[in-house]
Each structure stands twice: as C-alpha cells, then as structure tokens.
Amino acid sequence: MTIQVLIAEDEQFAREELIYLLKQIYDVELCPSAKNGKELLEYYKLYLPDVLFIDIHMPNFSGIEIAEKIRTSNQNQPAIVFTTAYDHYAVKAFELQAVDYLLKPFDQTRFEKAMGKVRRALHNQSNSSKQRLDKLVISTNEKMVVLKPEEIGYVEKIDRMLKIHTLTDEAIVTKMTLKELEEKLSAYPFYRPHRSYLVNLDAIDEITPWFNGAYNIVIRDSKIPVSRSSAKEFFDLLESI
View 1: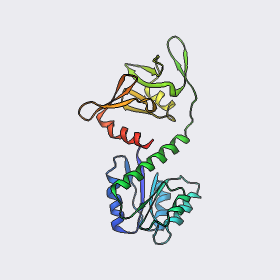
View 2: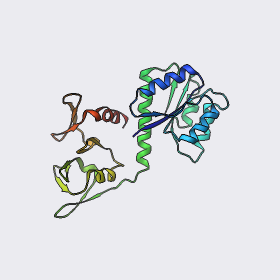
View 3: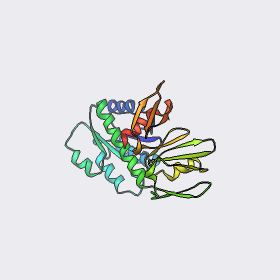
View 4: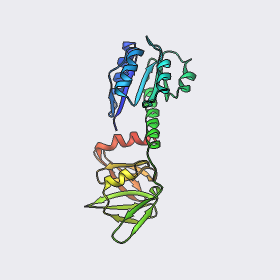
C-alpha cells in the first residue's frame, strides 16, 4: 500500500530535509508541500493524504489550529506528526491525537521511529474499518470445513488449488483462489511474501536468510519463501505491528 504524505513547513531547509528523508522510503508518495497554513488546508482537501507532517509555527494558521480543524472535520483523519524547534507544545500535540512529535533539526533514527508509529497507526486504522470474520467456511471436495482465521498457519497455492495448513497440522484443500482467501482474511495479520503463499504473521516461529537477499519464514518446521522483492516490505510490516 502506498502511503500518501503531505508536508507543511514554511522553513525551506526543514522542508527539503523532510522531503529527502521521506523519499528514501519505498512506499511513500509525496503530495505537493505546503508553505503556510492556508496552502495546507487547500492541499489537504485536494489530496486527502494518509499522513501530515505539520510545522507548528506557520503563517496564516498555526499547525495546532490546522490540526484542530482537521480533527473536527468529516473528511478522512490522517496520521499527524508535528514538527517544531520547541518541545513545550508536546502535550497539546498529543491532545490532538498526533502519532508523534519531531524536534528540529531532524535526526535519522528519530525520524525512522516516527515512521514506525505512523505505520502502526495506519495499520490499526485500516483493521478497525474492516469486518473481522470470526469463522471461515472452506469448501472441499468432500465437505464444508469451519475454521477460525487464527488457526491458519499458512496457505500455499498448488496448481489451481489451495492447501491451507492449520496450526494443528491439518491440511485443507480447496478450489478457492488465493486472492479470495486473502480478501476474507484482510482484517487479520496475513501477508503474501510470495505469489504462491499467504502466511499468518502471528504464527511465524522464525525467519532465516536464504540466498541473494531472500529469506525463509519458518512455521511449524515448514519453510515459506520470502521473495527478494518482498523482503523489505515484509520486514517493515513486521516492525509496524
């Protein structure tokens, strides 16, 4: 999932520094940056970003005033990270449900921690908006199997069939597609580390290096490949939940 980020910062150096840091993140898409409170309101309504990095001191409207307007609006509620050279606004920032508060000049390690909090906030927001199915009904050639999502360890695609491996070592074979099952499990912590596999992140026992930047996920002595192209996204996701 691409994360849309809007920066509101009137200081050019601080704005460019944030742009540089955010451009290093593979799944971030930057909206045009705002230089004052008026532009921030206009861009927010136009782009409806997932995340706002807001400088507290800006012309027209302060960052605090803008956040108050956003929090009382009926539009989407983005994750907010306040930026400032002063630390005495921290209490007010968190009253406005900011996920973090960054002091200038920005530190790479501290910025990465802030992005970790942003990912967790977006993940929780996404899950809360999805309907969690308490039980799945899986059709096989012989019967209908009722299964709780958390009982699934991993799923593998074999030709045109799916093999669902449970944490009780039961294997259920169904004609359901991997995409269909992934959609049913979207409110749960499942991830596709490879085009032929779907894994329950809560069921992972360990992760071992393989070769050429790839890895293996180990669940109950079974090894599930993490493709090289998915590795960074996979580890970022593990850190965010």
